[in-house]
Length: 301
Image (tube, rainbow, N blue to C red; front, side):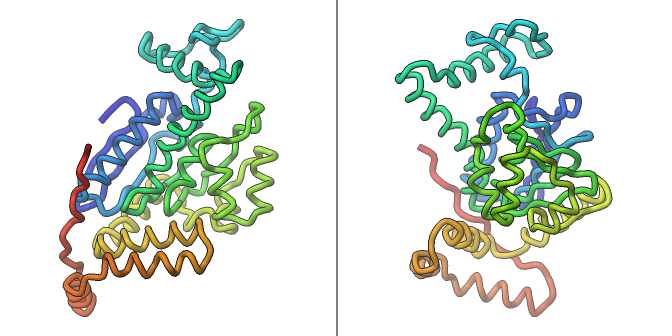
């Protein structure tokens, strides 16, 4: 548990729940490495079979905290900007560090900007690269940076009151944490471009129609119940087969068919396990959940 989210684990399912509803679950600078480290720790230990990301309150997340952009180069309040940060000096230091990253006034600053942005992108890449599927359950607004997060997940489901928006265009910047790269692979190009250029809100039923989400549920309670049911359906499958399927799907998404098929020959030769298959077939025929060993942990250096 930290100031941004709660993380609980049970029966192979990890549940990460954003927990700042009083601030509309805005994403403060320290949120990003906290998310990255939590996801990569789950990846490395090998026991998580599926990760569910949900939220609390009216909105999933209002995206990056706008006070970040309302402060001066050293973290001081910009003229006319009222400081609303309740976390004091630590939060101001984090904001100041982010603003220093955003400096593009010199060639040296721009070079550092690029490296810093890659590190920020990597915080959401952790979701895409995890060796378990990630389900994102969205209620209310999924705005700006939160939409980048959602597109990095394997599966999205939402409540009837949900909406999605590329908010960055409204504040004069291009979205830069992955939504412009991932969204066109989830929905038609024209739909992705309209969202990126206009910042308009996509409501839940439209998101279902274009394939951005897999299901729309009546309310937040029904959403969480559905998402947990989906997570449980994944968690009882062979974690080796699920991890291999995610690797294959991600590679096919990012490469041509011939290259993806070649990768599949190497991947299948690495993960083909007749003992695992025998257990899966026995469970399937017996109409029960399979009994599978977790994945091996990943060594940390």
